[in-house]
Length: 261
Image (cartoon, rainbow, N blue to C red; front, side, top):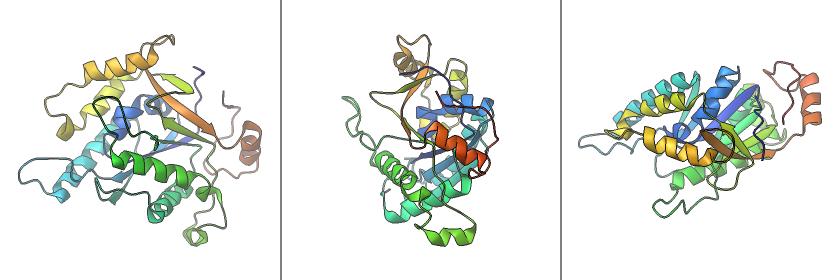
């Protein structure tokens, strides 16, 4: 475990629904945005069955929820957001979805990909992890490794100017054992404000007490008041990444002395 704060040049967050990022990792993303990281959200669905109101259509629900996501991203400091518009509540980690995510990884060329944990099914005594959450996480991880970094895979994407790209690290938003605990003391209010942008989901519920309780429990014993936790997999070691940067093989990277801790 480490509390050192690592700032990547670029981050791609891949999740299933509007509001998934705000519940899980928006505090960390807000800190990275403040530190100058390029950040993009990829939402596999637009949450089009997520507004259970009489007369609500899936088309209207998607429009509402996409607008809420854009506002939440703006509050967090993120302008780039992609909606894949896969069917809500029917998401599957198919080869077709993997290719779509590889396209986004090769387009944005992130240093870090943030996603959920596909292994979490039972999430406490009162919640089953949504199948879309698991599918999005599995598809994201499969797109990161090995697919996005293999130049002889999805060669047709090169016709779009999208070349193989190796992601340096994967941050898995953790429900259990974690490697990294990120203090969000300075961004807990941003996380809350971003979550509150999802008005269609919150209704009259005030998320502040629950969110602060969860974040406080994660931070317990770690010299911080509020935290988000991650399991981190490093796919490209520091020395190899430095060489890729020096060789100009990492588009968008601003050369610096940053080294992960």
